[in-house]
Length: 201
View (cartoon, rainbow, N blue to C red):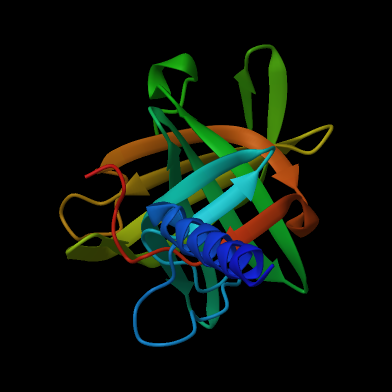
């Protein structure tokens, strides 16, 4: 009887060790104690954003400053697919889940119009202006001015155009990025701290 109890304790201990070693690297907390709780405003490179039963890894973060107003954009990857998570806190939190599309798919040569059409859907301009951005990737940072145009369409559709100045000026002379997507709710996301490393580099 004593031998059976001893055998049961040994098996339980081995199973416990195996469960600890089987934790995925992508979900392992940073060293140095308990992981910092993640929110929509402090995600870092290597963190995990779960959405629609998929794990998306934060590859870079952008923080935009426009006077006293600030918002965040996170580039997320799952394998070969990438998306942008845009977080705006303007009286209430607004989240956009966006995919980059070739600028040639939409006539977006500056100056932009009050309406743009993409795949038969008409988007209406709701805001535009200038902001300064800070981009953080693994081991690198960059910053500068950005011109932005935000459009909306029915059923929570959104479209954005961002022009990152190549000369440091506020003119529309830089790299143009066009994204389309939809509004989502904070409840649709689960945020997990990563290990501070970029999975895809």
